[in-house]
Length: 453
Image (cartoon, rainbow, N blue to C red; front, side, top):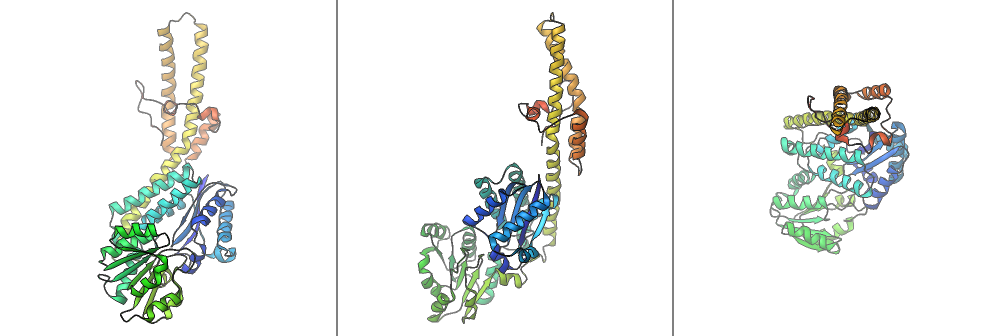
């Protein structure tokens, strides 16, 4: 099986198209299961954020996998394949691993270096685990990717290379309404992006932070973390009339804030204007609000058009970005070497198992011919024969693992299988065998034998 990625992001598609493709909730779960149930797919995971929709799958056929995943994205979004296909990208095997590591480190984000993607990738993995679509391969890959992302943020200054989308949005807001400190802020939604928004507003010194959400209890919990106030979503019109800054992060597929509601809120206002930051996909705010006097709307699409796409936040931080790229290159090499070495393990176990079988058969035959041997002599003969076989197999099995870690190293495992007539897929060859014993143990006069991965 091999790793395949098919998807689209802010780098390959306009936000308007991403808005139509993005999936969440029940639709995301259905897409996950549809991919998993496709022919030639053994595992599936979907990363769906405001910046990207990507399907990761373990497949046994490249072209069939690409076709199936592209067709499913088209079917779920309702976008014809000839339109959607122009914006899709495909990564396979080594490049797929590198792409994932770039994503988790924030190198592929709309704002380079933002850390929120780590939580989004973790959520995608958790969903695939809960839905039973991620098996050993994707679990291990994504756990490794999350470690790489954490290392990048811990060991470099990539966090300074670009603020989160919230931070960038607030910078744009201050250009219109002045410093956030002391301003009245309204956050619509209570999910992870809303929590990040509320925390960012609190650090910026917002005078009042109001949380509006369909589930009032969640709004209350979030408001308590920032010393804010929670309201029902039905109270949104009244709160809009009092707010200076609104950040909306619901993404429910319907317009949470309509042009009519904003127009009514602005009708009786005598103070300054209203800045709306829409960080949701699909959009929460009706774009028609832009024609309302004293109202400014910034959404993901306008951020992209303003140059906050690929490479945004790079200026002055080339050193940090270069350091993260070096980490990614190192971790990709380590992961691929580990995977290649792991693939030879069943062959090594099969060889050790076959050798153990030969030893036991020959010891049994010898003992039947020498029935007079006492227990001590039997044990000594048995240990001597096993030690000889271990020493003979030690060097080739350790060496084949080292060679297998290099590109094309699977040929060495194939050679072992041919030379010794091994079948590592046979249950008798790989199950019921103590792996440590099968891979060799340190014995008197032998070197430490390399264990599995």
